[in-house]
Every structure is written in C-alpha cells, then in structure tokens.
Image (tube, rainbow, N blue to C red; front, side, top):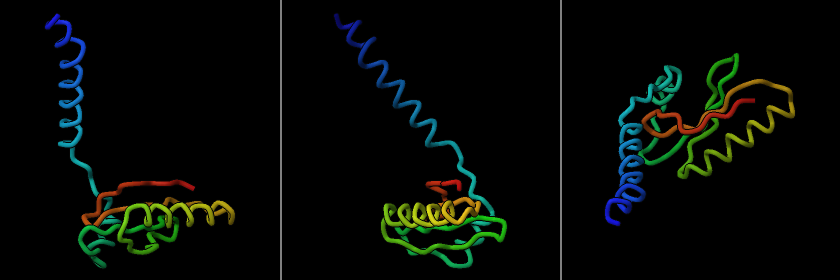
Length: 105
C-alpha cells in the first residue's frame, strides 16, 4: 500500500516540482529594444509597462502599478489596431525588462 501511495501520489508531485524548478532556471533573454526602453526610461520597482512594436519601432503605452492594468492597456491598443487594420505586436514587461505577455495584431 505504501509503495502504491508513493508511486501514484508522491512521485508525480516530485516530478512536477523538478520540472518547474528546471523551467525557472532557464534563461529568458530580454529583447534589445525593450532593454533600451527600460534603460532610457526606467520603471519604478514592482511596476509594469506596456509597449507597441511595429514597423516604426517601439512605442511605450504607459507605466502601470498592476499587471492587469498593463494587460488591459495592451489589449485595448491591440483592439484599436485591429479595427484600423494596422499590424504590430503589443508587449507587457516588468521593471527588469522581462516580457510577460505578447499579443500580435
């Protein structure tokens, strides 16, 4: 009974924990244009930014205190671009420059 408990319950959770730990250790490269944007206009700690990347380059959409606010701004800008027929990528990033969300239009 103990062996089946270990095999069916404990072992899968240990495997999932190891997989998550491995994924967290993987390097996430910061795109050069986002790194330049964060370097030129640094965000306050624990804040998020939204930006639009298109043929003209990277355009910031604003700085937000909460991730959901930055996501909403990116979705609204994407909806406007889709209605206008414009193409672009909308990014949500944190104060270190890690891209958290990416929306394509």
